[in-house]
Length: 315
Image (cartoon, rainbow, N blue to C red):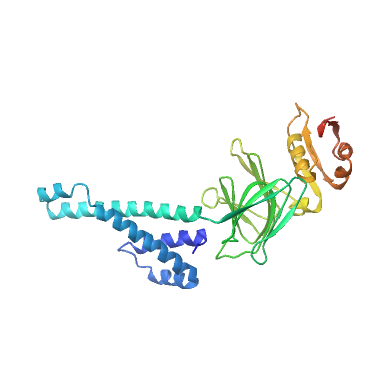
C-alpha cells in the first residue's frame, strides 16, 4: 500500500516520539490514529521498519564490547556507555527508516503525458480536480495517487479540490507546491518558474521558504540566481491561455517567441541583440495563427519570415 507523503511524515514523527521513554502524549496519538485508517497502516509500516532497523544495528553490538567487559567499569560508566550506544542505534535506525521512506517516495508508479506545441489537453484527476495542459508541456502523474504530480516542463492550470487530510503536491524542478483549495497556473520554461493563483492559495516550498501565494499574486523564481519575487496579477489573467489569449508584462522577446511557439505551433524566434523586458501587452492568438505578421500591429514589433521561422524584433 502506498501512502500520502504527509501521512508518511506524520507516521515517522509519531514513531520517533512514541519510542521515547518520556513520551506521554498518548491521547493525541490515539486521536491521530483514529482520524483516518490510512494513519494506522502508515504507522504500522514505519514502526515495523524502525524495529527491523533497530535489530540490525543492535544485533551488531558495540564495537568495544570485549574491551568494556575486561575493564569492569563502574555502574555510572556503564549507564553512560549504554545511553550512547542506544542513541547511536536509534540514529542508525532512523537513517535506515529515512532510506525506507525515500524508497517509498521514489517507488511511485508514474506515467508521462506530453502535449505538442500548439495543442492543449485536459486531464481529470480525482473528482473535482483537473489539469489543463498547454502546448509543449510534459507532466508526470501517479497511477496510485491522484494528489501528486510532477511538471517536468511547460505550463499547466491546476483546478484542485482541497482536502486538508490529503493536500495536493506538485513537484517543479527542486521546488514543491502544496495547494490550499486552489486554482493556480504554473509555468516552467527553461530554468525559470512562476506560479499564479486565482482562487484559494498555494504554499511554495513549505519546508524551506514556506511562501504563501494568495489570489491575485504571482510568484516568480529566477532559474539563474534563485531570486524569488512576489507580484500582483489580475486573477482574470491566470490560465487565460486556455481561452486563446496571452498577456505580457515587461517580457523579453525570447519569452514572447517561446510562448507564441508553444501556444500556436508556429515557429517564432527573437532577433539577436534585443533588450530584455521590452514587451508589454495583451493579444488574442487566432489572428496570429491566421497571419503571424499581425503580431507587428498587436505588440508594435518588427516581424519578418526567415525560412520556416518568424523572427520578431524591436522597431
